[in-house]
Length: 303
Image (spheres, rainbow, N blue to C red):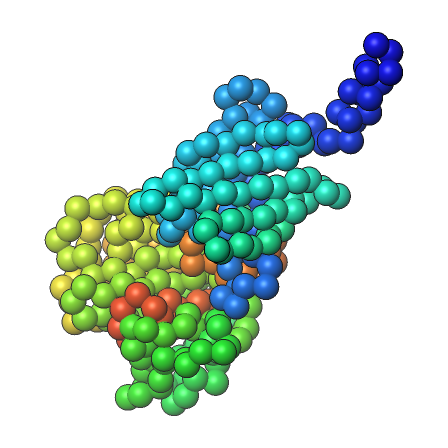
């Protein structure tokens, strides 16, 4: 009896406490040509009421996790839908997650780091630095493709950046922290794009003139913050974003009206850079439909 109890205690001691899984995690998918970044939140681990949220392989949304549990020191969660079963596993090692994903023949490895606390607040003390014009009106020298091994699908023409709708995401060569971003863009009917802030947080571009609002609307912080009003112009007209990002606080002004504001909890599906505590690039989504940009001006905000 004493030996059995000792073995049980030693086995339990080999596993981290279930509560150590709680929190928000920024996830890097290993050996992914796209440079995938996922996001996970676990709450109430160590209790029967464990629950979680996930941004990753199931699709572009922030999803409530369908089934989540901890078994022998391993976090496990699954999604089921449309005849597809997706399974995730993760163990804690050195304060980080070491994970695996499997769905049919698709198998991936991933690692998770705790999302950092970001102390910057938009308190009126930030001043504007020197504006940077990311569209130089002649070529793509300020940008590179997210996936280097595929055709870019973007061109500089008539002083604009033009995406053909089946392109890799475009990524700025330079990285930024707090800033104001002025963007002038247009889309044809039924098109869809997005602007990735720090390469992590997507402000949606969607041709949705006159439609009801939801988490995917034009000017939404994609799947996280819904705009309060639809002020999208009809397809084919030039539209203007003025976006302010300080720390995790975002304000989105579309066509002169502030429609989206709030605190960003974590990554969105467009993310290609999971290191939330560091500067990141501006990204332009290229694979959801044609889009044109005639101006992208970034003004750093500094102390």
